[in-house]
Image (cartoon, rainbow, N blue to C red; front, side):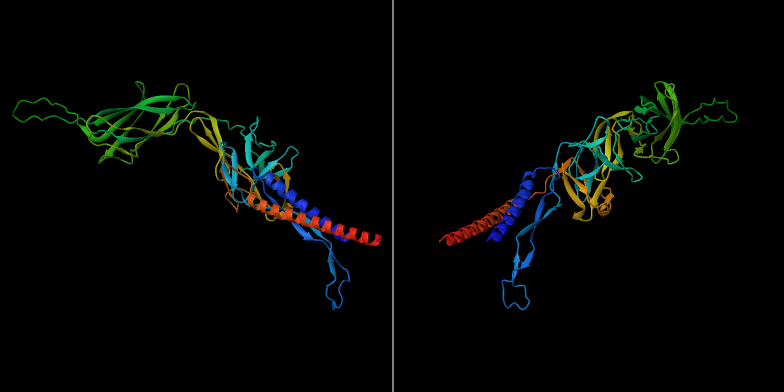
Amino acid sequence: MLESIYLGMTGLLGYSRGLKVIANNTANMNTPGFKGSTLQFADLFYSNGNLGSGSNGRNYGQIGYGLDTKGTTLNFRQGELRQTSNDLDVAIDGLGLFNLKDEAGNIHYTRAGQFKFNDDGILVNRSDNAKVLGLDANGVLGEISLTGLKVHAGAATTSIKFSGNLSSSTTDQTVSGVKVVDAAGGEHTLSLKFTGVTATTPGTPSIPGLPSIPTIPTTPTIPGFWNVDLMDGTKVVGSGTIKFQDGKPDPATAKISMTYKAGNLAPIPITLDFSGDVTSFAGGTLSTLAVASQDGYGPGAMSKATFDTAGNLVLTYSNGQTSNAARLALSRFDSLDAVTAVGNNQFDAVGAQAWQLGQAGADGFGNVQAGQIEISNVDLSQEFSDLVVMQRGYQSSSQVITTANEMLQELFSMKGK
């Protein structure tokens, strides 16, 4: 009877541990990046109690000694991805964990991508300020920093593209609002003046025997030829020639190269590009020719930081430019035996040989989704079902102890009689 009580005690201990695991899962049902776990049960050792006869060597006399627990197993099934309002919240759609480095230099891993930039411009984990690690161009792990990236330097204009129709019905046209950015990031509004190219031809020749008729020179316009002057106010700062054939720019003259010098700054080469959607047909005296685009821009301050699906840090600036900085590093394991939960939404590596380092979207790693977090993968309905099983097992084990106790009491009462 005493052994039965001990057997019931192993059941109570095992099911109380199972209840603790379920309680931990349900308590973390809203914890970002949390991975639920299950308790592993096993029977204890056996002994031959010689209770059977005529067994012919079979183990009819074996007696078990109760319930044992073998630790928990993590469930790394992906949780639901949920939208947030933070551009630095990131989730992994697929395999992989983010790499974190604490103040002591230890590496931890997490699926809860809730990041921020600290006062030093270094990307850190919001919960414990551990540094988020990325990979440089050489594949070396390192911190992700905004040093030298908060301001985007301007770039001088090198090409101006035009579109529209330059009316061939007139000999003088002006295109205003030609914006040029100098080497210091300053903007200058220039204009283009188009003048039809003309040629002088002789007048009517004299007829022999008659008084000579004075020659009257004429200056007809050569079809399709235009002089192009880049004007800074009334000053010509560059010039060239363009030719049209059948209303289309001649490829040989469709791009005009010139040099523009603003103040005391160094001269900048500029190409006027008419090779795109530019025509020259009769259209009255008005032209629709205008600037389509130019590639210069002034300096700008960083206005936004986020990540693309490949894990690249994408920075947006007030001048409309973007740039890619460091790339997030991801790690994954080959076996659940190589990972252990350490709390704070983080995991540690047990066997480094079973871990792989890589980047999002490559070598089996998942893609990074910015503005989202992965929530807990706890299945509440499954947890409640397991809770009922644990409760019934605990009740059954306690009933075994109660029954064994009653049998002992009955034995003691028989001896007293």
